[in-house]
Amino acid sequence: MTESAQEEVEIVDSKDASRYEIRLDGQLAGFADYRLEGDVITFTHTETDPAFGGRGLGSKLVAFAVTDVRSRNLRIVPQCPFVAAWIKDHEEGS
Image (cartoon, rainbow, N blue to C red; front, side):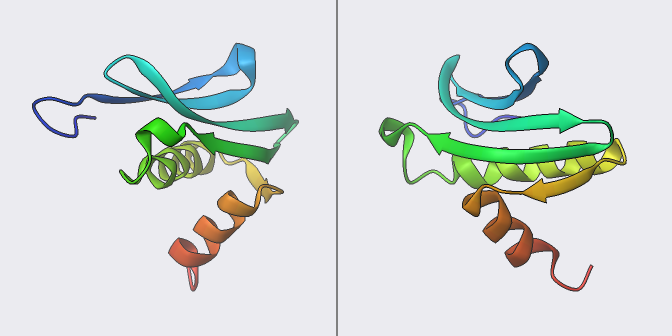
């Protein structure tokens, strides 16, 4: 996923760290921690580095993570307020 010619955004599921990570030009810009138990994934904390603020990276990160876990047929428990708000705002009525 590329933002512009100058900024490259990469989002990955870092399974060993139990978190999704978003990188901007190779630098860690944010993450969404999770706990996976069977077919249930609980998002516990989401954070973006203030140095990368105002670019919508947190929303991009959560959108990617939610799409990924839905494709794996996992049930989401949004313990993290940011993830809960994102799901409410983007998936109402679906």
